[in-house]
Image (cartoon, rainbow, N blue to C red; front, side):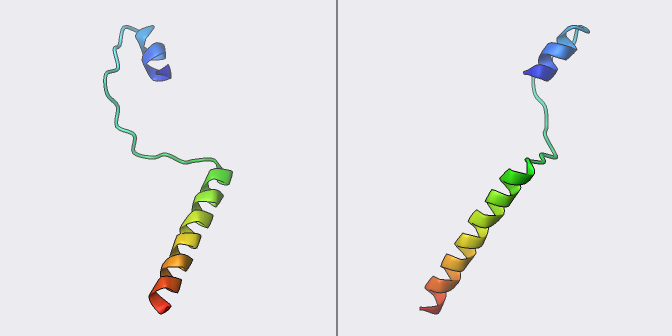
Length: 49
């Protein structure tokens, strides 16, 4: 919404954009890594027993 507003000042109308690179905050990346590690551990445990 911010891009649409800023570009609207110059006469542009943004309808769709393609986001190709999203870099979350370091704390979010750490949390996501911990979640994925827990899933891998649970998967290994279920496959071994």
